[in-house]
Length: 496
Image (tube, rainbow, N blue to C red; front, side):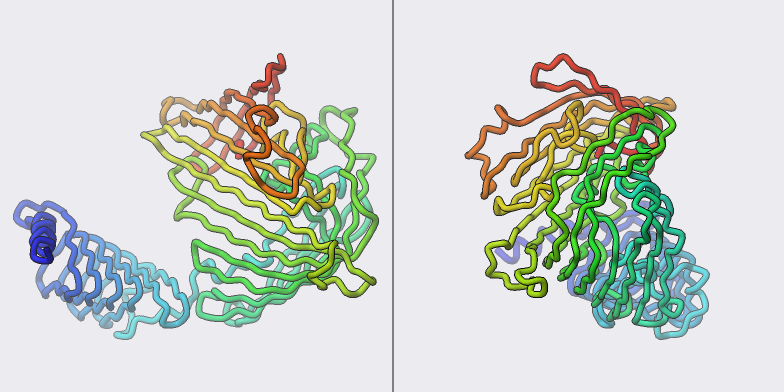
């Protein structure tokens, strides 16, 4: 049997070789053998070396990918394409010429991901070393920057002019970040101060601690904070429920490039933020503001929170890709004003929420987008922490949080005929939404008939945008429960 496999493998490799005389570019794969490009040789192949080393003394115009081995660039080597070393390192002679791009990812220095542009790589030493960290190492994902202007029914105008971080111009393993602003609604300051200690070259492992006074919401997935602000300024609308938290948190974060993990514990004073009575808007000045969901009186809360986030490379709203987010939390109030981490208290409440986004570019300019959301708890959530279904970013043509409960499930799907497909300035979309929220202490599809008790809607939209951003769109949606009702919405972002 092994001889048959070897024969098949050799036939595949022979078939993939390049016919240089005819200038045909093909893929070349070598398993567990070193590969050498001799001086004077011009190679236009896309080369993959798995389990071996690559030695370059000639010219490479294609892409070199080496998995589990090292790349050596001799004094006569010229690379016009791309070099990718996965699990190994790249060494180059000072006379090697690089017109393309060098990417090195390995664990020798702790989950390193490096990129070198041509201008930086032409005059290198024999030992390939990049002192500068990649761009993602210079930005904090533990302490994200806050928008300068946030406008909503609870905080009024939240102005945050100070967003800064110091880490010795990227040279220190410590980072101090702060965001300081002022809420003009309740007339009080708000902000966050964070100290991080990172490890490894790209700051992949981070220990952190934060002190803060800021609002918190479970509705971040519905629409962006920027679009919510615009909705408040133009139409006196707010699509978030939020509450105030003041206290501290500490935890650990792990950044694995496409995957991010975070675990933290926190102690906070939790309270509601009153609805401001003078929310100015350009239109709909008499629109009544939604009241807050019922909240408990101010109390001290301790919670543990774990987060997992994943995103495929170059993920964008209208390209093939996937994004995943899961967050679990266990929280309880203090038993005597000080002890909040008893873990065996009957007051312990557990909540898990997650969403999965899948996009598929079915053909040129035609994209299928989908979103799946689920939330579960132990049936003891506070009212303002319950899951909600309905409204913008959820199920169209239904009021905001038309259904609430301790469990939820939601699905959204749409087909986008992009401007590349229509060959015009506009795109079209057809969408359908569905969801259901119910009260129970366990998540089970068998206990409730989602088709009978859930809500759903369908609609069409037209708008204008580019590959990554949406300039505007107008949606018209109708409930699928028999109601004779049409909802028209203007969006400055994608539906989800």
